[in-house]
Length: 189
Image (cartoon, rainbow, N blue to C red; front, side, top):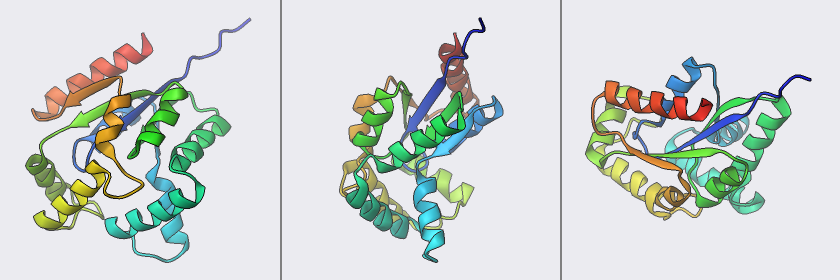
């Protein structure tokens, strides 16, 4: 009888510019599927010909969560993973404790990533993703709303209570990659 492959599910929680994308890219290079909870809202705004700026995404995300439940994006993402029979998965864009709790109950190893606000703003200014083109005051406003639960569908700080591990990404990229490698080794051993 063949042994079933064990699932290696990990989820990253952190504010804008903390290093979640870098962590996801690291795990993608190791063969993991990247499942962003935000893909659901991005698809929604695209289907409805809406802007994909952070404020629009947040607004419609909150509406969908109000209609379908706060853990809706996590539930849909997890269902997708199960239906596709993925075994090595990274869940990204976990922004509410109900999402974190749902994924934790499903056996997802949750990692919080933290970094100071100015450093995070400097990072997004350099990376220039679609939602990154904001001035510092707009960034602080958006960041505070996501961190503190000002938006009903987001409360990143409250998500940290579900984390199995919290890392601070305030040193070099090499140091962060080394920490990610340690996490990877602990997942598969």
